[in-house]
Length: 139
Image (tube, rainbow, N blue to C red; front, side):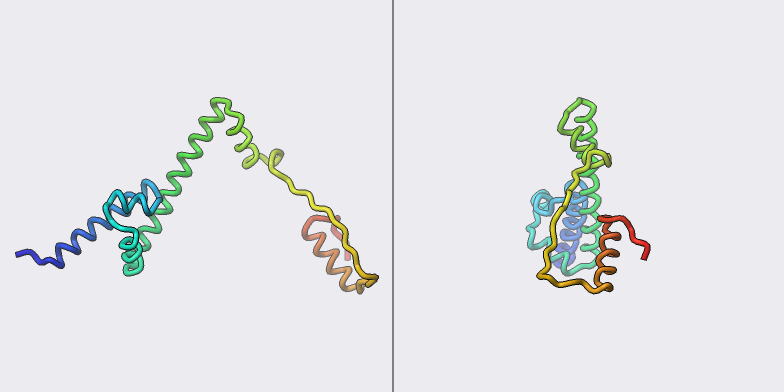
């Protein structure tokens, strides 16, 4: 006669392995659980109970995301080859310094007639210099 606990453990180990396999292909927990026939709550209970399973699923999720990123980049490059202007613009804005979005800030600081101390002026000049908003000072 088979040991029922051993049968349950064997089935769970099989489901866990299938979940990890699914997450490597598509990093969406709900989809992986549905394909394996396991509830989300069970998945998260297993993650909480087993550091080994948690680490394996974290790695599988990362691998799945990297796979999706590779697929998306491949499609973007195909779009560029097909002269899709949206793909071309996206690529240039994110990979070429001349086409990146720039933000220009300007403003005016008003004080209520208060004068800064020489030390405060020095700190402000240094901060602006570090932020590359002014030319460096030689102090």
